Length: 84
Image (cartoon, rainbow, N blue to C red):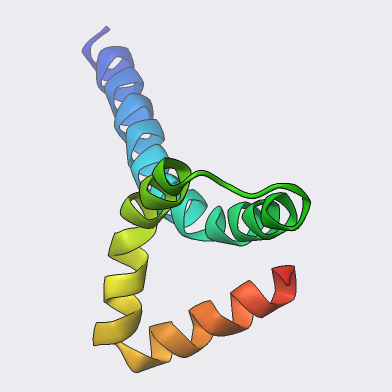
């Protein structure tokens, strides 16, 4: 009985660990489609300054990391060009 409970707890810990590992990756990868969407939207009517400010604030950690870590900045530039 105790072994089964520990196995269940271990599975939940593994699942939570997986989610915590995947979420930052999804956040970082989401900048490409969002940038492409924002560019298309600007071409057909534009984004409001509030929308632009919100996007910049949401992705500011990635921009800050890109400034502080040149290899990450180069990778981010490359990734954004894929969506351009």
